[in-house]
Amino acid sequence: MAVIGVLALQGDVREHVRALEESGADAKPVRRLAEIEGVDGLVIPGGESTTLWRLATAFELMDPLRKLIAGGMPAFGSCAGMIMLAGRLQDGVAGQETFGGIDMTVRRNAFGRQVDSFERDIDVDGGPFHAVFIRAPWVERAGPDVTVLGEDNGRIIAVRQGSLLATAFHPELTPDRRVHKLFTKMVKGTS
Image 1 (cartoon, rainbow, N blue to C red):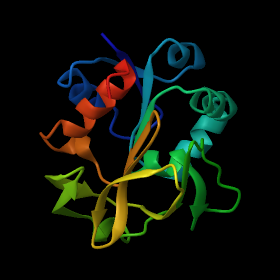
Image 2 (image 1 turned 180 degrees about the horizontal axis):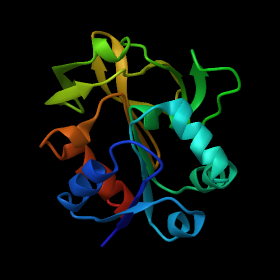
Image 3 (image 1 turned 120 degrees about the vertical axis):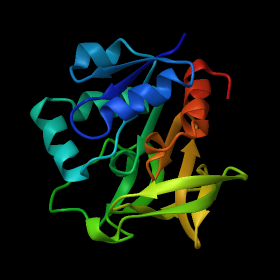
Image 4 (image 1 turned 30 degrees about the horizontal axis):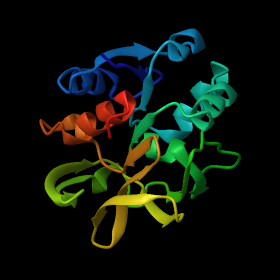
């Protein structure tokens, strides 16, 4: 069984753990480097990207996570996690850094502020999905090796590049487990 860690610095940690367990993974919160190195894949949950960056810096995780992701560790980022997996960032705060990994430019808070959050049915990977967007980003540009899995009104909101997956929305807040099942299969090497 795949062991998938959920980066427990901030965000929807419990919701991701539950969604992963319902998708056939052994899931657990992780926050220290030794815990992260002991899992087969990593989820970077939603929350606030500048807070994630600052906490990862304070816990001395920025460089080690960059190296693990660059070295092939499967990772899935939702919302702020998408921002953290971006190779390039627009509208970040001064000096804001990401873990990188996906050849994409992501715009922070692209859909608006917290009050502009919404739910909508979208098409993801060829099927309908009820998505929850909370101060969501979108992908401004995706590189040639990035597969676009979902769009909303012409905006890229779900991508995959190799062993990395990212969504602008929060699939962990819905009962639909297709995104978590896809990531579990990616970690197992079966998708």
